Image 1 (tube, rainbow, N blue to C red):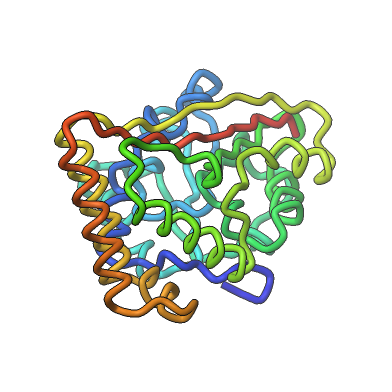
Image 2 (image 1 turned 60 degrees about the vertical axis):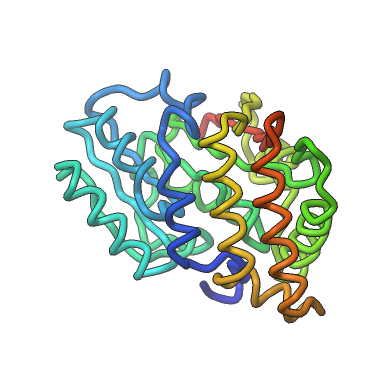
Length: 268
């Protein structure tokens, strides 16, 4: 990432990639799918481990996807995903959304999932996404709203986790509550035709709760997020206490966790 982008506090530990690898076009980009058709060209910004990317590539084949991310290491994972799924219509490149080395009007669709919350200038990012999208094409973005994460039971350690996460994300230059800002950012970027929608992830089965809790606990104790919490004044005991809180929450038979998302579809 260059100076225009926030520090990505999640990092790319296996627990993060495992969590991101759960994402599909169906559970994370359903709002966009009705607008895709075979033969389209699509840019996937911040593609991560590439599971959504591969799904989108299947939808528009024989059209082509260009998938970019700021991390060369995570692009290796995305390339493996594409090979495993025989998706030969994807090209990968390291790139920063604020300065895409791509021509104007190059894509029918430009897509970004959970990206704008991590950049310091989301309006500039949307301007650049608009630049590379052909007139009449679509720019699609989806981001969560950490301030409105909700769960039951109200385990105190999860409240502490959320306070620490939002503070750390903002200190790193991002906006963890990005979802509600998307439409306004798009308008500031020059879009006039902006469609909005909302969606959510909801973890309620025993298996889903356990998976979600384990990935979050590992992020706190083993990944870059934990180191960020330490720099913010936490100690190792705090990290393990928060992780244990996640696991204790998952064991409650009536537990659930909801992650709300906002979505925009903008006509270039």
